[in-house]
Image (tube, rainbow, N blue to C red; front, side, top):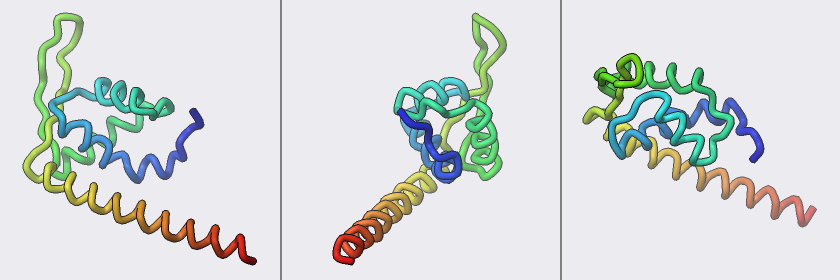
Length: 115
């Protein structure tokens, strides 16, 4: 699969993280693994952790440590009420953006074919 445009990925990373966390608590590398399985093979851990920090600082996520038998405690994240509301808003914004891009690119293709 081709690499995703890093700037586009950065723009939707918050939506992706909130979406995955809407299914339940998870830790950083667990999120990376889930997103890679969803087709983001080129997603770097170094991209996800700052995204989680930004979302937590904005009050959209809470975190807690969970002890691990295999190593150090893991920091798990969960959506706050504000995070659930933000996820709904971002999903709507994403749908609107995709529709606008599809409309604009379809119009451009049609205009290009007649030119």
